[in-house]
Length: 91
Image (cartoon, rainbow, N blue to C red):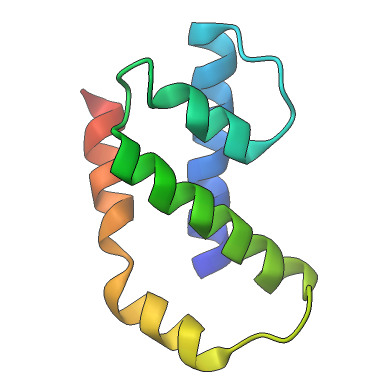
């Protein structure tokens, strides 16, 4: 489910960045980065989501060793960014 939440944010960013701002890149991180200077989301949210996308890639594709304590900590403290992202996108 955590991977799905991150992917949904990335997909929405790709959609907005391509439709509204002409983004023609293929990376989710690039799409997130487009939204910051355009004023759709702020820099802190962009940085957090870019890191989350990298983390999602580790989880989904099993790149290297997964630190389950880090996954647990992120689930305990890092979920508020998704509410923040939703609020910023909605404005």
